[in-house]
Length: 467
Image (cartoon, rainbow, N blue to C red):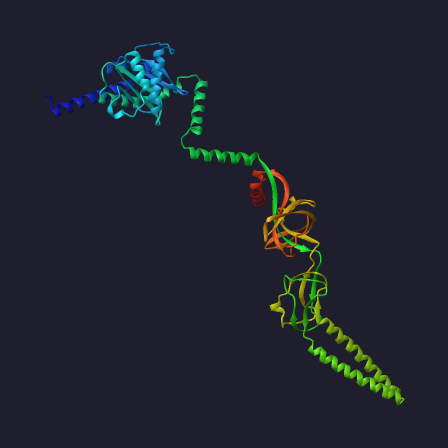
């Protein structure tokens, strides 16, 4: 009766013999520099060590397995039915990327073995095992072993180890044992398979998208627009100022109010003027009686003096009446109030000439654009574009440039050129002078790469003096 110690000793001896045979096989393969010769050595040596009736190596060419060599057979006909059926069985193992043993053991009950079963029944093979040979987890070849007795677990494990050790050498020989054109085509095919293969799909998709965007940026064109802040203005703007020194007593209009010509805006306190008017009227009556009295008494000198005082009082009365009329400040024309707040004006003291209101006429609108000096050379009279106001950014209005200033002004530490543009189309009821927005001025089609990089390149050229 065999003891467990003897069984372990036997397994150990078989394992040592397997390693010895594998090392000897690797030495033989390393001495070969031709692929087919190495395949024949592999098949013949394994056939002897495993006592197999036939050892066959198939290699993946395109999408199909093609047999490269058989043990003890120098030449064979690829179109033979047995060869094609064996290739189909190898492809079955390659597609599943798993070794297939037939008859199927219990642990492989899920494997697909139709091609193997058909081959065994058709050609009377009793036992067959097909083992994929992998490069970087990808099966590139299949080794098929046939014999009359079943393969043991140790033999299958040994075959798997041999396949893992010899595949790199065989793969290198396969790649190098070809003429230059085939090697170059294989290299291209390998690179393309990495790019267009099913692995790393997300990374490849991102790479393709980035490549497409770069190509589009280099060769594609789009409209180039110059962006500039703008403000809506009107040609007619009136400054309403204080007619004389005084205090504001009544305020009837403020910012945003629409007024008509002659509408009362505010009224100055006129109580002092009314008292002054009464005093002057009293003086006029007094000087008139003095004149009559001097005339009746034939006092010519006194009459002349009374007449002069009466004339001066009448002039003063006209001036006071004029101030009283001006105390009611009225709108010079129909428009909208763009300056003047009721809370600040009511009861406030004013001096003669102080601006109280600004009134803009609703009509004759134009747009003032502030263009940076780095973009001014792209704009010319007649250029077109669009503006969008902050209050209604979803609505765009066409504009056309008609005036460009020849001198720059400094705004926020930048040189700015003021440009005027007319608004094409019908004026909207909600437009108000002073409304601000953003304008896009059409500067023609440019390459996308230029649009993205020209400001950076110009900065480098200017500050580093690079051409």
